[in-house]
Image (cartoon, rainbow, N blue to C red):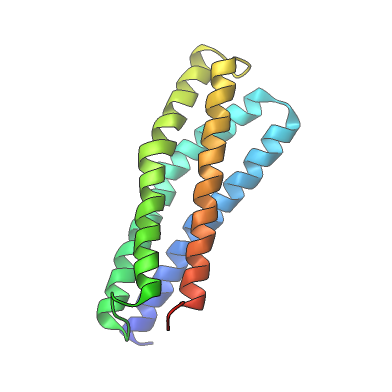
Length: 153
């Protein structure tokens, strides 16, 4: 196995953890929403916050760092359009997570604890976090498409 192949393997595994985990989380959110049990949605919300900080953020950093190393070590250039799209996309998804999803999720968890899951504020925050997370997942899936198709090559 070459050094580049090792980087590629690590890049793909980290992307699988990030995108796969975000997908499973959305499936769980759909199941919880369909159950009609606000307490179940609250549990999923707590897991979401933990996963975001403890799993998705580290995985996204590995994807970014190893992706940069692959460009430096492999046959690619930062001027390749698909790499530029990938870099922009990963920055956008990380910003959405750090600036919008995480703070809104924290407010949601506080509202659930103090107001309860049936409260309109809790429900509104839950809808906002879900919408943001689904948009972010869509961006991640588009990034995977970008990495596979490599437009402009």
